[in-house]
Image 1 (tube, rainbow, N blue to C red):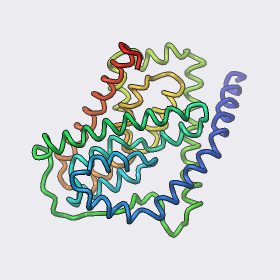
Image 2: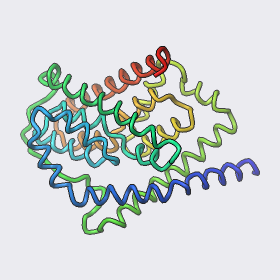
Image 3: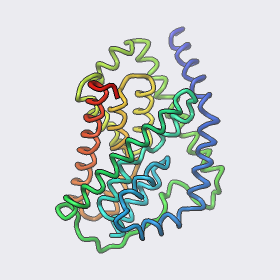
Length: 287
């Protein structure tokens, strides 16, 4: 009981330290979404060949609003498959906010986003040039929604931000507690080996975790990374497949089911390849 009490207290204190940073970040995100949603939708309609670049940059914005928007715009035939893939690969859901809430790790945000953007832009243009005609089916339904639906504008800004903060805080509290318990019981070396640490297969496991269709996947992955259980290469792979609910929304609004399966497969392949390349760089050239 004393061990469980110590773990709970340490977990609670760690999560409480993050709370003000999370609330401030979510307030900023709500302000951006509240006042710029329609503008971003119009930009997506006019980007043309710059789609993968714009999509990658938009996907970097925390939460899954842009991945949901991109799924709807793609189902309506407004953006290309490459642009959709760029948004999906660049999306990190809540991971960036969690890193920003830890002052000692803020410097890692820039590296993570840079790698995600490069991966997303490359994949987007590769798909539009070489694979688009083999996968994309004609769009006729014009089902376009310009917001993620995760909050109502009538609710204002503070209440949605408070709800998001509470949700992520509870996720952090539960998973950090479980992780701390596993570390105390097994040790970090054993936990890392269970997750296939220092092997080429760890990005594969992380990419599978990333497919969990809500923000839990990004919380799990980033906490494993921050605690040293998985590598930077693995967390990149996991966050590349972690579209929040973007992929789930695509399956709902895009009536071509086989196409959705192919898109999920491509997302997984690009994520794993990016993770393996980064893992090789980490191992052999000290990246």
